[in-house]
Image (cartoon, rainbow, N blue to C red; front, side, top):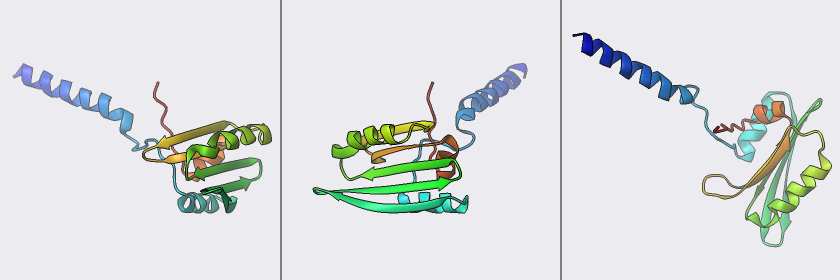
Length: 131
């Protein structure tokens, strides 16, 4: 009988330990331009979006600003211009908390963004860092 209680305790503790990493349901996630616009506007940000055509590529741009908080987010059809835009963001935005980019990701495609931590959080971006 004692072994059954020990076994149940081990299972419960193991479930909590391994499930605890995902208790809040947050994983890496990048909203599309529509969802991100809605998220930011709901939090009082001024948001503008644009599409830039370069060669055969389309680059979708979102800029969100509220007081000193801001986010610049780019979605690219291909990886061709990602590095160019990342370098521009580094030059133009010395006050960013985060700058990040992804190329050829199966789920998120080609993206680049920078901004303050608060604005990125308000946009709906969720990045879980694995340590």
